[in-house]
Amino acid sequence: MNNPLQSLNRRTLIILGASFSIIVIAIVIYALTRPSKKVVQHPEKAISHENGLRIEFKPNSPGLDIVKSTVIGGGGEFVSLEAPARIIASASPSVSSGTRIILFESAELNDLYVGYIHSKNKVHRSRKNLSRIEDMFKHRVATEKDLVEAETELGNDAAELAEFEGKLRAQGLNPNELASGGNNKSWIISDVPESQISSLNKGKKVKLEFASFPEEEFVGIAEAIGDNVDPLTRTAKMRIAVVNVGFKLKPGMFGTVKFPEETEGDTVVLPYNAIVTVEGKNYVFVEEYPLNFKRREVVLGVSTKERVNIIEGLKAGEKVVIQGSILLKGLSFGF
Image 1 (cartoon, rainbow, N blue to C red):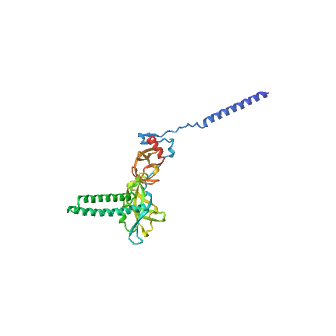
Image 2: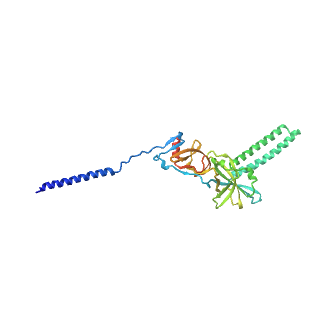
Image 3: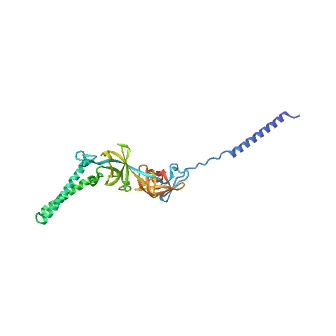
């Protein structure tokens, strides 16, 4: 007859053995299936090669996410330079006599022009007087003192005329153009940035908009660029002539002048923030292949605050950095 106690002990041992086996199997399965511990990768700094000429990034380099590049070119691009403008003078028939007169935006300009006309007449009179005195001196009718006084008078009058002409030119006006510009002509002065002077040629057609006529667009001709560059604003005055149909354009009116500059086949347009400037030279960064950027010197054409025409240094189809240029500038030049 079986002992009940022995049967119970045997059953308990079997249960304990089975439980232990299950625990061991579970531990083995957990050990085999648990995810491996991730290895933390520290960011790798970008590397500067060839004295900063080429910048190499690693996939986890700090700042890489802010560097954006795009393929440039494609045609049909243009930069339209806009500059403030004002009507400085206008030809008009006189109300009383019907003769041609010039109206200016200020009394000071009017005084300068009147002074110029008076000085011009004085020079003409002094020149004729000198010619008369020279003839008299040859025939021993006038003395050498008379001749010297006539020459001195002509020199003084010529200096006065040059002074008035210089002051008018400093305002962007050409006295000769004012005298012979027609009966319905207005002259507009626009302050053009010094960097754009070489791109704006005499005879270029420009578009004009005036606050007084918001729905109308006028077309003018760029006549000349002033002889002086303002040392504070670094701008030069450009004179633009426009036909004043109906004499509705008045001296003193403010407007905007647009200088359209279409790109040629070998030029491209970039956002202005793609350009970095160091020691007077302009650079961009070209992504020659993924994560590698090369510094390239470029020559700028017409530009606005937002866009710039590149006339040398790039060609259509290249991939150029348009965001993050400042970061690359620091890596390339070391600051």
